[in-house]
Image 1 (spheres, rainbow, N blue to C red):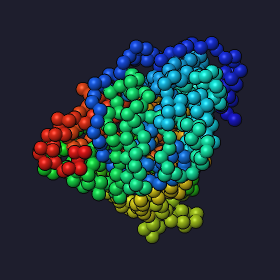
Image 2: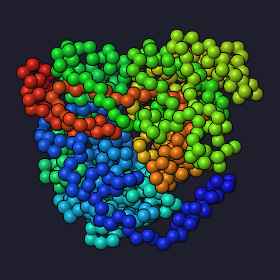
Image 3: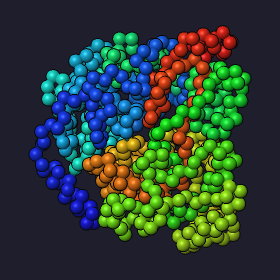
Image 4: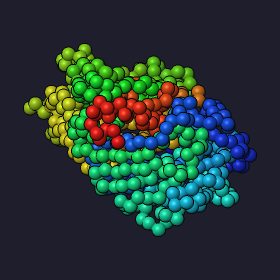
Length: 613
């Protein structure tokens, strides 16, 4: 055990040995990660929600692939879209604050200065859809079953939640362990609460197509297994008048129809088969909507700016494969990806190259490490790449012409250093003659136009990279089992990183099937940095520690970074209205509503009937 790890462990032991502190916040309505909540105890609604938004109408959405379960909290099966709307949580996020939560199921919150525990007093009116009250027993049952039988990510997320206990008729207390962790009260506040009286009679870790009992604003109405699912707004929803809900959940019905792939789904949208479409393809955004309905204003296209951290998207290596365990090999392959050519020829110049796991935020590393970052990094010197201290990370770049001979030369130098040689037009291991070959696993044909040119460049190095596209269900299963060499992955981030970082990069998660550590990172130095991010006592230290983690991840060459955009691109049949203020950190589609006047105008202009429901 290194000195740095021993110091961290000693600090954790000392923290755990302290007596429980008196509540620093007793009976409060909200909790912020750092600082104070934006909205006071008497707030009536969030600024980005219209409290007078009309209720009614139906929205039809789309999903890709299929589904075979209505329990999205277990590893088994492929869960249906939209299941989050059937459950309430103890607290509700504000989408215009970095990380602040307000009471939903919980009426008040008690928490001590050191945040070594948190207690929630449940609202008297909180009810399940069968009319029974939500109780502390439900909350305790939820924590226990999610840790025991839920998706493996819950075990990492709640690793430092020791237990929950009943403190009164409506009060439940969570006990924490493992050292300072300011985020834990907010983490358990996000937990979807399950009805004990429903699930204790059923097998939680099995797939099911029986609509489960919930407490949220929607209930499942109809299910056509693998093809569609519909939700109905709960007319007597117990929490409809709470400040966190006013102006939200405005649609009477929400339907998700499943399509084989994104190409078919786009054509279905233009034919009026569904109403609202977030667009992720730059090509489709630039060329796929050149239809009369857009020109005539029947379909609206919008780019809605946001301040949401973009996270990291890229070609992700599977370090469980011996082929990718040498950092020089991972660095070399990045020279074969020509982003500038792709941006000009495939993306219509819409994207910015990603240079951080926390892009579009103050958490992103930049320049050389600051004095505060160096205090975090110095104890790890010799165990992390030396470039962390001496160079700003920049992914390989080109002039966009497609001529990347110089980059491929740099790649070959690194590959030679790692023991690979070019022989008979193939790259082979010098000691064994083993050829350098791997598969890029994709879940959509849309990725082929990016992956195939990359594979062609790799071929010039003597590397055989096969591109394989599978259906969504097979892709999910293979990634959950870590049965891939390389894939396109997205590692989303928030403005307040914390416990979820263990599931993304932690050594324990690397061996947990279904975890988000798809890369398979098992590095004590990364674990130590994640622990420091989680235990950050204030915003300034959180920024410094996150930037330090960012540098180590970047110089680990665990992914070949892709690109990002700072806007939501959405297309929709023009029957919706939305609040004048958009949330900074979310699209906020739950705040939109069906505008009766616009819907009537669509109908009068002979828009496809299915878009007018």
